Length: 63
Image (cartoon, rainbow, N blue to C red; front, side, top):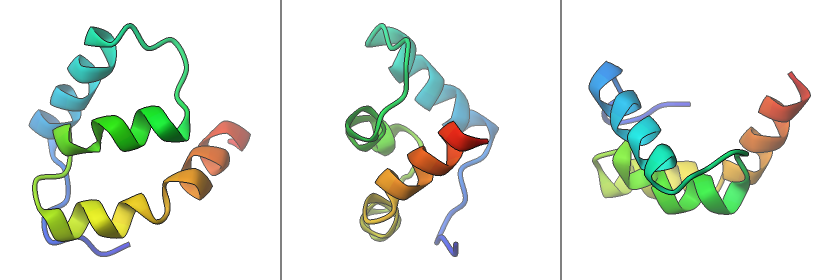
């Protein structure tokens, strides 16, 4: 998956803080979609990833 700017450590920590602030105990597609802006800074990247969120979440659950 090609992104304009791949999330780094800071963006990953921002996303984790967003999840914690929401009291997330499980990850699902709607939660990922709602918090993606914490990790992805460019609209083009958000649009590209949003299309794939359900499949990515299912893949992660099966891992």
